[in-house]
Image (cartoon, rainbow, N blue to C red; front, side):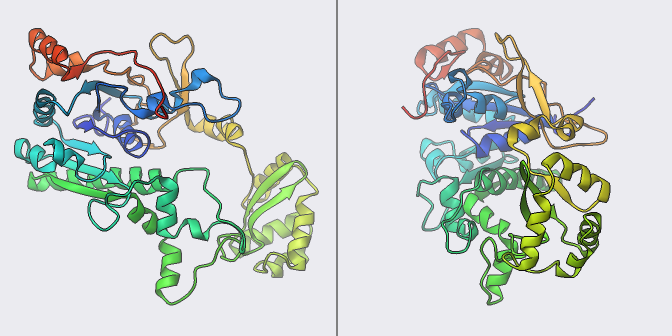
Length: 408
């Protein structure tokens, strides 16, 4: 069965998380994503160390495997004339170029948007950066937390009077970077269908993080002061919409609409709390609700929520969520056997569910470094002698077992 994007070819020069997650979405939908890695150690995510306690050292690179299924890898030295010529040749038959370098890096190498557009006027070029391609912060280094801090998002997290709390997921990297880039790329491709012209796309993760702040920003722009956690209606400021501790863990209560709160109160036999729905934390009503939730376990509250349809769900740890009946039924964990591996590598599957052209999570395992260099160059018209000469000159690299750490 045809996949939604199988007629698109992507040259992905990005590394680590934001760019590769963007191209993963495209790859799972059938796009031919060619990772253009350097002739050294390649994408840093290949060598990401197991930071977390209890993770085996052999898990180094697990991030890479999760982000790079359904892609091919070539190794090109863009600091060489031959390497630059090769990229420009590959761009002639590509639809999309994705990169995440600091602004101006590819221009200085001679393979920026203007150079690519000269050989392929229809190319869609997307650059993901921390602070955008222009402006006073363009050349600053940064990571997810910096972008959240600069956008104001981090400042609204944590309890009033307490320190900011970092998110467990990379909101700016993925939400403001990867997803914004994927949307923009497909919008540009759709426009190209009409005009036959490509264009460049400037995705700033800090801009995107600010866009995620649409509700607090509306308050600020109207002259108000956006609330921190515990103050805002959707940030713990109402007793009907916040987590509660129970006998053996925590549960989430999202009974925002009066009908759900009424069902919760009636189901627990506490109709006297129905009129207290919008009281604030710290009130007597809040204490009463807290005591009610301590009467049952997470599992019991899960059954209660399902029975009474009142937006009550257990708060799961990540490992519990991955093994839950919900995500098993939804097919949200997939397994793909890597070459040389005994057991399949389990990763989170694509969340995109199409009725007629379903995505394919398992077309290709994550590629070894440079695994497809010869294959891609042969398809581009290079013969064996030319490929050997490029490899001998250091302009390209073939299959490599290079190892190390991006921290070294």
